[in-house]
Length: 164
Image 1: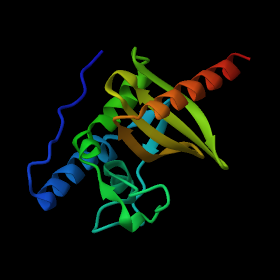
Image 2: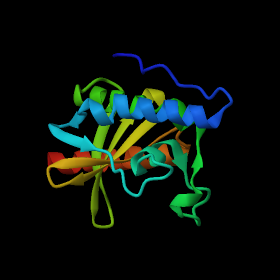
Image 3: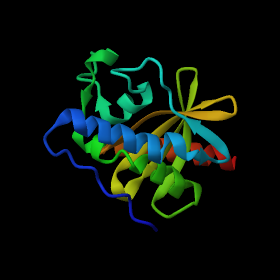
């Protein structure tokens, strides 16, 4: 099993850090032609924020509260930021069937999603299934215990249903 890419730690100046993160996102994910189960994974650009794509903001930030889902109010999460290059790595490891990486489909409303979970590293990537491609929705780390339990239940139910 390979080790995750090095973290990109925040070193005190947000503007330059944001640019480093965005470059890492473009290089490691957007321009890298990442695929999952043969389907290309795309990043959503619109609506952009300060010239950077929608998917980028979703993977480096979080809603300030459950009640506030306003995209303009999202707050950068430094732990997510530092792991920006882990997105492609996690997907690649799951594609290879590496131990400690699992995936399953779930439903959220009318949308079919795919969760890719790097359990050992407490990191998850969320994709949305589209016609012939996936869309990167978000990624998060430092999962709370209730999220891990939810993932375990969802994964178990999905794979049980696949076996018939």
